[in-house]
Image (tube, rainbow, N blue to C red):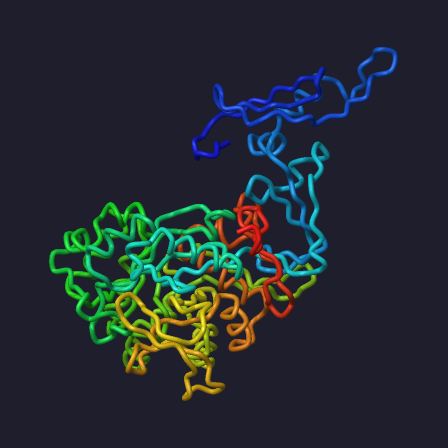
Length: 499
């Protein structure tokens, strides 16, 4: 088994029949804890019954795995019942059990422990917490602009989005100077979610500055760079140690000088993901970047070459994945869609489903082309959660207000004095509802586009975006209309009073 520090250790159970307690020792001296587990009846006439025989109980305990023993001797257990659980790509009437911040398998207990508390979900959907892999800021704070109070910035944003149902995210920086990266990235690395911390930071997403000025979007063109010296230029910009220790993935334009050749090195040397975006790459260059390990596309359709039938550009990568979906029949002969990640060519693409960045029909075309790769992102900036007014995205001035040329005049964020979109002000659960409305997909597919898919994109699908046993107990309750009713981070109920 593993300790809470991640070290592997052998688990040894110790049964004390006199006190009727079980303690578990990991390794030599790491004691998980002791708990009164057995109500052993006194055998009649001084005889030991077969069911309560010390030998039988000891053998049963020794036959259990380290995981089972840790559950037996661990902290309080909570059971969520009367719910529809999203598990295995479907909603099923089932329970969810968690302990010490993890989802556990109740069959491991086999009658030895009952839940310490039970939560009636009252028929709601129980799903994994939402995962946002592109979040520039919110509630008046921006991860690129608030350099002097970046720790406060992270706290405010993390706590705020947690209450919206987003239990983990990638703090995103826009194109900045080297000094900014060296100041903010050490604060934006991986940080566990909790009531104190808020949503979990999965590591930063550095969007730029190695991008094409022709597709700069809301990025400051004076900060954009090329990489003629390969990895050395990335080191000068961010610091390779910052990339290794604090960054989850990076957005680059593969056609920029030196970037295409550096992609495999960035992946192998820094262990980060690479996404293509803010680019005018041809389909051939995009394909080469994908072959080199760039498995992601940043906000599909935005800040990239428009799709053309003779050269589809980066958008053409949606046809690159093979075998990610396979149709099978269940026991009743009903078709079911099973989705796998065995395909090494899997492409994930971000979609900003606010009804402004991408037309609903374009969202539907992308989804129908490659449903298993759809990753919903907010690309939210500092005005998310705040009223109309003037804000900052990095060093760029932004105005938030109604967008008159879009049906319904929704609120939008624009670079001051231009029609250039500067991120969004949408929440991730709003994106989920919009995605379902735009594509007519199932509830399961809509939720998984903001849970399982982003977790798969980052390679953390065993811990995030799932309610499988062993995953983190990041849980949300949803109505059938996909509104958040309750939020748990690492098994703790998050409310405005507790966060």
